[in-house]
Image 1: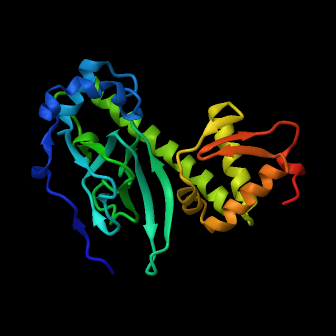
Image 2 (image 1 turned 120 degrees about the vertical axis):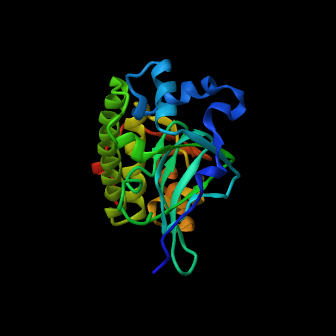
Length: 251
């Protein structure tokens, strides 16, 4: 069993208010995060101070959190892209999810006595992450500010949304064939973008890891579906063709 440990000391972080000289440059990203939903910029600024906000830069391939670590902060991606992933004893990697700019992560493990984090969080490209003390978020605010109560309610909403996302991921993995997994995932992405043409956030290998399938077999299946006129793709851009129903496809 891995030794539980805290991956970082907060003394290592830069003070958020001094990061690149101006906290306001990150407000457009923070406004996208559900934790700050309904708050104006002045309230966001107060919350960052109240929650002991701090930031750190990560190079591509560098771990933000590692499996087996215990953490005390929740985190918000300010810039870049991160992957939540797991790797088994033999080095086989599975991507559980991608974290995009403005997304929050780590909240399920930052609560006291929640246990060690179950996955690695790794920078897929150079990234900047904001860390907030969970204890400061969930504890009663000494100043009695209304925006603190709003943030607590928003945090509950985020946890609910993350649970729904995990249910969708389980749905992809529960499909029996590579084709079924691909069609289930691509259908959901089309619905999410409300468009038959869309970009996915994964490379071919990353998509295979996300769906827990063999990359070569997945690529062959994509080519077969393209030849059958079910879809078109170029790199990470996909277009689903109209005139068919997934229920009618021989899988």
